[in-house]
Image (cartoon, rainbow, N blue to C red; front, side, top):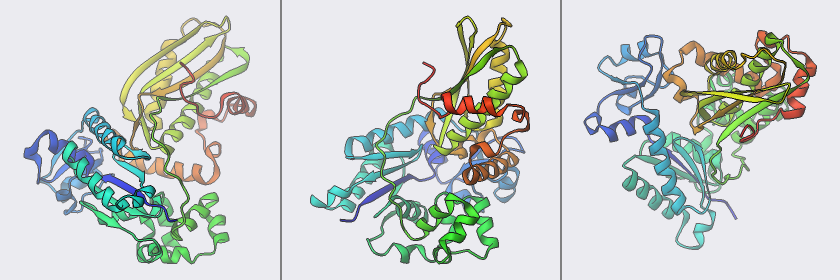
Length: 402
């Protein structure tokens, strides 16, 4: 029996929330993002998109294309509250759903056909969300998550699309390879350089060649191009924090070494945040002295998953925290107050150069592993210390520092 997987995606979410808060903004070209010249576009209305404006575009260029656009700095708290409202509406109606980001959801509606039709039920759920939240939302349904997500993006805004079982490849074939979820600018550029521009062409590529070019992600690309995706809808649960810590083999007062380890930790948890499409607004640093006294210090920051912001914050907290000049046996980092949302939300603070850098770094980490690309300042961290981080507490864990 074929599955019925529904993808729900709030249309121009940030802009829709702003228009909900201030209805007079409806119908106007709006841009949400950084106010400075070096800032970038986090989101824009469909009216602004008609002028060629898109997310991650430099703000100065967006305003050249659409000089009459109204620029809004953004209200992350309002976005989070509205996201939570939609989540509650879905939770009340759906037997099994997954919150993929702040503005998109997957629902496994496979069993609904036994009653009155999965797609009919999905359309009614969409209408319920729009009525109770006051926000526009699109949907698409197919046999798996990949096809449904691609279809939603292809037909939104205001989409209600069913891709019948057996027609997945026909739907995908003419589409550009960058329509496949997970293919960023770096991968798309690489594929284009090889002459691979459509999903049909990618589907015909030898699997061994894709593996040699992209590592384990080569298999993922080939499967998605062939409409294969066995990824289940993961039951929704709110993760409270992400953290990691390291106990030294010998207690130390080597501040340079401790900071190098903290930097390596931030690189790991920052990458994990972006992998999970999450952002943090609370950073905590923990130290434990040789006499087992444990101290922590935390600070709230604008929602982010950017290493350079997290690094600056962690090192500042460590400098304030480590004032007893005693031997240290453990250091740790925790990121909390997590919300769903990809790096796009961080565009409020990031520049175009920052975004391109993170895309390139994460592309390499995806292909070769997170440990294969590190900052020069962590090169002095010995393999033994890195092994301690990996073996003792290396994997990112929930609520470890409570």
